[in-house]
Image (tube, rainbow, N blue to C red; front, top):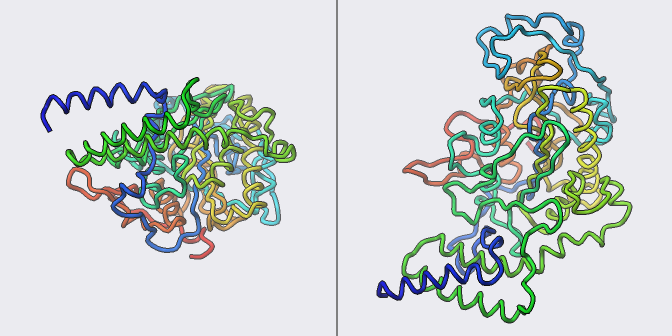
Length: 470
């Protein structure tokens, strides 16, 4: 191949990408077609979950107003916080300030047959308590939002590391060839709307077909998904086949796996012109289901609409689904912010559990609800600061025991209580992978001469006490 023909081909490919009306879809990353795959991912052992839905409460909900009751903290409200707990500890904006205890402004209640204690701000989540496992001994390493999100998603703060959704897709492959295997939605509350970087769902050094794809929460889920006027399926199919023929030649010449990904992108984009409008059309949902989630208008950008969409994605074989609700960074006006944010997510979060369960999908769908860290048990004006030594989240389905809690924070909610029951983010990742049949020690990829894993090189353990089949 001479240099002139190579340049001509590059020019054609570059112009062709944008001439078929799929500029946005060109960034959609999915698995390679079977013809371009050299092997099919397989789990390491039979798993209990095949789909993961991660409900990301971006900004960090206060654990002492949601999932972790602290009556002893309430007793010392407005009193100096014990210096013995905080001396030498890392704080965020409260570093060097006079620390004053802040009790919870809300009450906790025992829910269900299990008697799990959950804040009265979350009555709907409380109603499904017997399906939940609350982890109250979470801790992390990063005290600011963006690196904390990166650590929760990738196990590292180093840029360029794959997100956990990409690792799951890499280890298991996709179950659908008409939609991306890893899809992300975002919604926003009225208070504490912390920004979320798109790098949180990148594939890093893994092949780009494993990258997460952000769908729009409002209006068309994917921009430009419909072909422009006057372009028929036959014409578009012929264009894609012509472009892919050139790409196949380039692949044979260069041997670059990203060219194979480019080929599969064109194929995926073509199929999505049918699958995405069908996905977004919720006219087949009953009014009872819409009411269950609290959906007023499908596709209105709300967390409720996104939760219903998550169930529809799971039904269609999407492997990893993340819903970010940006509403929990309550440095001030905690009482107003927490009430508003809880109201926005409570009904739909519980409805997702109920809907999956009644459809027989909860057993093989792992649902996770929580933030990147917690909030301090000390005051920050009318709010709470970031906190990494203790926070809470809940898990449900996918082989997780229901109606239980695991681990505890101390009596004031400052630090996890007992060694051996603490839950590092790496432990969460190891447990999530395990439910899907993946051994966190074996799931690795070569990068800069090293075998890199989601759980890194430091110890991580599967939380076997919370597993049904441990």
